[in-house]
Image (cartoon, rainbow, N blue to C red; front, top):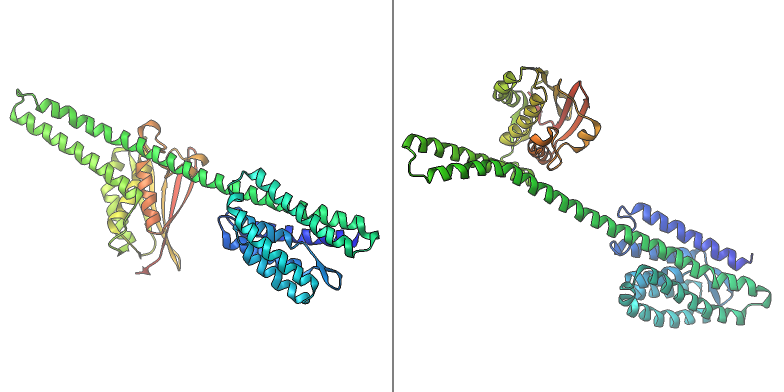
Length: 416
């Protein structure tokens, strides 16, 4: 293997390593078209790398793989004038000689040619783009080889053929292939996000329809009865009361969905955790008694957090209500608080049926409920949304048949 071939292979390996570093640092799977600044940085860095490890074959000629970043950057990012200027600028450091003036003419003309065809190039299919970029590189390599054959000794012919006709086109083919993979992955990622959003909208629509249909159907039925003239005043008053209750229920459901979609935490006030949790427990005592659930507390410290009082109540009423309903045959519910130097932890532990790992992952998702067909998951959706708006976090530990422990973490405001 000749010295030029070895030098070009070394250059190509450096460009490949730099490209993989670019992909690893880029969280969006190396999308050059999406992150044009990052892509331009890669191609400029590649040019610098090529010139740092260039190989002077004669006093007036310097060879390297600068054509790879110049061509790919020009075709994919339409920045060939910038890259062409940089090529000429870096070449000047090797001397103002015949090779420099050849570079000025070539990269001036070719920069505008690549800039002109770049929009057309980007409209082509992935495979065609790879073929065209590789073909252009091959043509340029043939032209450079033709010039090199006139200046190099005949014993280096095989080395020159391999170095110019194989390595540059191969490098462009490989890197352009990796670029195309990155773009396809980005497109698939965006498509997946859109599909997930559409699925969430569909689930939300199904949940709203399911929840609101029941009270509206009841209200419509009683309105039809009111249309009959034979109903006495006492029955009319009773029916109107039922209709009002059902419409209030429908309005409450709509308000819950609005809270889930965009919970507004205002006004921000100082909340005494022990006081607020005690009030919530009092509200839930009738439901706990109905299910034969004993509620106990362990408030070890008096602490405060900042948040919206009504939203805080709504969040923990939903959570505790679900815990109580998970124990239809009786059980125990423990509410515990713990404070560290920076945060407050609220524990809600029940002795209910417990949750599987799959159920834990899906808690809080739209239209998902551990109650099966009897629920829509609305209460947990709202609770999780409020918790997120208050900048709290949640951890869930559970075991089938033994119960569930919810841990809520809030930023500590002050100790009392």
